[in-house]
View 1 (cartoon, helix red, strand yellow):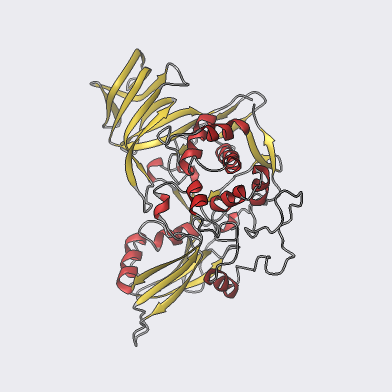
View 2 (view 1 turned 120 degrees about the horizontal axis):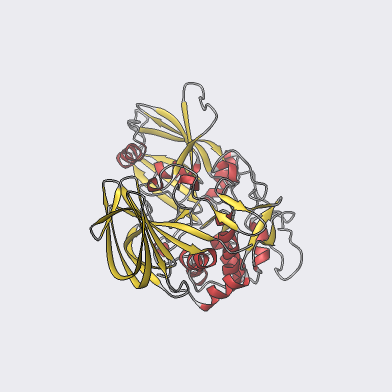
Length: 484
């Protein structure tokens, strides 16, 4: 099988400014379907959306493709790329990329797409998702899961035969510009007289490319972030390796910090359990150099409580049980957290406080639903890590059960709440029963499914090899060679 290429959506704007840092070959498709080939272009360029077409140098095009003469060295720069979309670190920066640049029209804007070999893409992802100073074993583990996640695109978009793997862009999903697609639960979620609205957000939001460059998919910032020899070594050492289960590539999800316990797939996305993404404690007491892969579940205090139980979850979240990801070691954290991630100081256990006015205004703004004053936030259902996937919002005007975990996080934060594993305390309650203040005490950062990046960093520092790290987080999976 040959190494495939991936189409990465980078920028979505009415006007795109970019710089071709080397001579690029240009192919343009005119609005009448005629394809024209220019010899080479270089330097600063401006493309503008114009009534469904691309305006470039006074001509209208349906599509523009700028291809490098030397794929190994030629690069281009996109100006004012937004990173951290809808997160607390959102900002703009200029970014540089290898590979080809494709510009298309979509949703009354232009979309800039980077077409690049998978292994080159991964080199950037590893440097973008975490610090390039991370340990070799952590980087190797992340290379495998990032490759697996990318190539586990569902069969309508991914074609594998004996000779080549290709990524088919023909599937018509929802718009890429929306950043994600909310999928309602198939079940009629009517509970008594209280309506229930469950949504989850999948990566198949993208129609004209395979993945986006932000946290909705995998962070990808081209060669903007300096790669190091150890990153290149990790990519080369694991080239073509993927996680497999039952003859299929694993959908290798990952998040920053699980909070001490793994979440299961079905509590965050569709109701389809993945056997390799199941509950387990992020903890091991044995020497990593032994061959014993058990995780100390028989040792006193080392097993995982039933965190779907409200009392057990409350105790778990209000305490700080030992776990790989329970660390404040700045050296280890710097391996995983880029500078803007390090703006977050608490993640294993955290607190957020809202006044009544702040919370009611926030929920109205984020959900578009007027609950009136918020009387209560009631946990209805939790997953295996204690993350809420059903939460009842009780207001003076309306009561509604919402979910799943990301919808809860989006509703209760101006960007994204660190996780949905939280308990609620109410203070300053009026004689009418209206709280004046809400305190959310929570655990972890992200959905908690699959690899825990901070936990994996600790494992790498403790001497675990990348295959042991992977088998800890993807239970029962195997490490296979997909292409050379």
